[in-house]
Amino acid sequence: MTASASTRIDPKRYSRLLAKTLPQTINTEAENDRMLKIVESLMDKGEDNLSAEEGALLDLLVTLIEKFEQEHYKIEKGRRSTPLSLIAHLMEARSLQPKDLWEVIGSKGLTSEILSGKRSISKRNAKALAEFFHVSAELFI
Image (cartoon, rainbow, N blue to C red; front, side):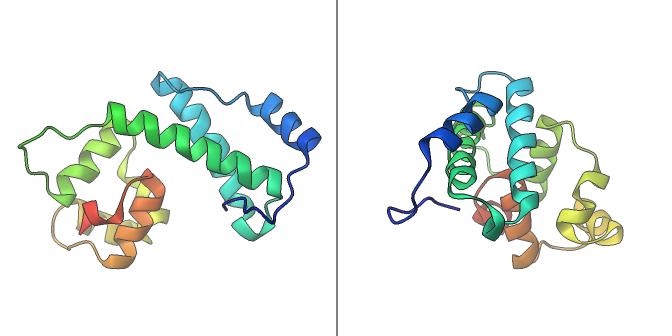
């Protein structure tokens, strides 16, 4: 949710959210994990159920996470990555197991087939993976 110009943010409510979450520039995996958990809890509420203040906080945290991940999860220049190798890299960087992707991809079996290379990544799965990993869906197509 992006806070639009027509959406009024209550400074007191927003400052309480900021004090509770303490967003800051992310420098470590632990900080990144903490921010990701907060983002997940906000996303679990559903975008339409977020207050203007929560939407603004979500935007801020996603920006901080994206900056950290762009700096720390760089793909080597000149090295062509496949969608499958990119998933493996992202999973390793976040210490994820295949079971962590079951809900994202839709099932245990489908996850297994994709990760083993038996099945290609659909556009729907690419979008879901992109949202989960906070990267562009184009990386998985």
